[in-house]
Image 1 (cartoon, rainbow, N blue to C red):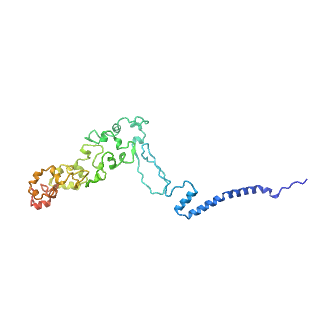
Image 2 (image 1 turned 45 degrees about the vertical axis):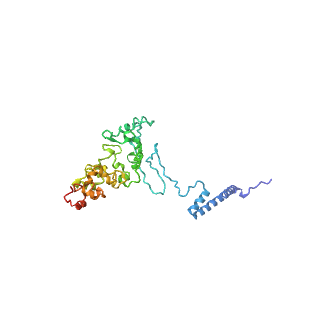
Image 3 (image 1 turned 90 degrees about the vertical axis):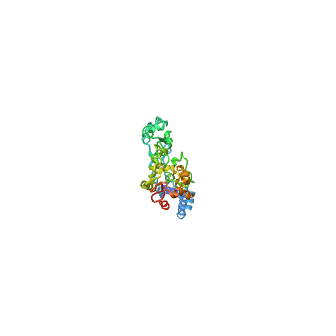
Length: 326
């Protein structure tokens, strides 16, 4: 019986099988590789819009053109206020200055029990006024006039009790805060006081309380002179002063916010003077009867002057009363 002799290439059979398997595997993925390579070649020569279309064809979930996928993440507290957390953002957009969130110290220190009955309850230990004055000085004790929200213990109508990105933990800033309760000024006024127009309410009014009517931070004369210092100097140097001016009663003639009259006058200048001066007495003056069409300020300075009747220099010269009107 003849013994079977193995073929010489039987030793390399496993290698041939593995090579054949790899060839089949490559052949299986070759169309996909060619498809991707062709797609990349096409994209390199396309406009942005065409690239967007091709990418949408090849892949799902491609963001729209111009869409920023690295949007800023904002962390809020339970009141919906942004917390001052450091967020790493990968973007080519210009840097934006972030407003710092200032927390109320008890809230920041997690001392809930200083204001609330417990850390698990939103109920306060007392009225807002009582709770706030347990730490803050009671500024209402020695003042005559009080802002209604303060007097009614409505501190949180203006201040956020936990914190805010606004100064003094205000819920809003400037005029926007005051207009939550007060009506906006009409847009049709002829003359407008600049602080009121700019929403600078607190430059004249105290937000809490004052010893001056209207919650003014200072009496009329002193308050107006903080801005109108040139007028203050001319009045101080004048020999004669109009009584309302000398008494600091600016608001007796001028509206503090706005007016339909020029110079913020509270009424027509022809009628304003007759609030204090008797019209019949003025009619007896010879100069008045000779020029009935003129207004008082055509000849008289409404604030102060060198003449005892407050005649303007040109009026004194025309009347020939160099020593002062009588």
